[in-house]
Amino acid sequence: MSIDRRRFLHLSAASITAAFFAACDSQGPDSAQGILSFAEHRNESVERFLFRHTSMDHAPDGAVAAGNAFPEYFISDRVPVWDAGAQGPWTLEVAGLVERPVRLTLDDLTALPRVTQRVNHFCVEGWTAVAEWTGTRVSELAKLVGVKPEAQYVDFASFDEGYHESWDLASAMHPQTLIAYGMDGRMLGPGHGAPARVHSPVKLGYKNTKYLVRVQFMANRNGGYWSDQGYEWYGGT
Image 1: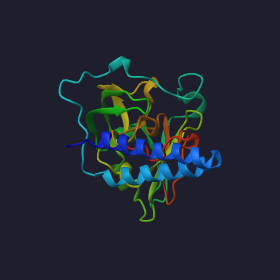
Image 2 (image 1 turned 60 degrees about the vertical axis):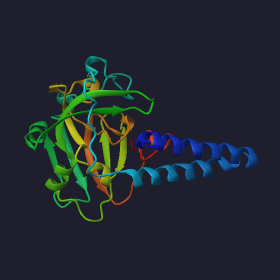
Image 3 (image 1 turned 180 degrees about the horizontal axis):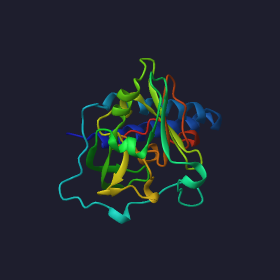
């Protein structure tokens, strides 16, 4: 019997959840936090084991792009829009454990080696959508700034009420992890994270920070907006 990666992860999570409820019944609610922590670390170890740096996601043949139906998510009260008049031109800071920190304008970003990919977008709520994304690989930024050997994590920060999520370095360096500035043949719109956002099919949607302003390479991970509220930190697909 064969089983695909996503199904295997779901079964693994279900097994750990069953163990969690059994333990709660026998030990009481005070045990919940420790068991939840164990479950997350266990799930992460499974996901890291299954992660393949060279495996590539491709939208199924014949899959229809979501287009205007692609959901818009943000945590601000309204769609975040960069106000150049009040804040100056938008830039992307790339800093942290790097040899050559930089601030890139949108023109700088679009001048870097470009990738266009038609891939799946996996949401934690259970839906999947297809879109075409254009941008530059995070690995290109890493080469540009000279990431130091001690960097093992990357934090992606937003101007959407300070939203951020941190990633493991291997996932960030995946060839399909982009700093995207285009979607479906057009420049990114405000509803989907303009001027630039992270997009990768190797992580669930909430890990793909929109409205990006900073990429910071770090020795230690530092959580994130949803991760700090109980969502899985690794968030792999």
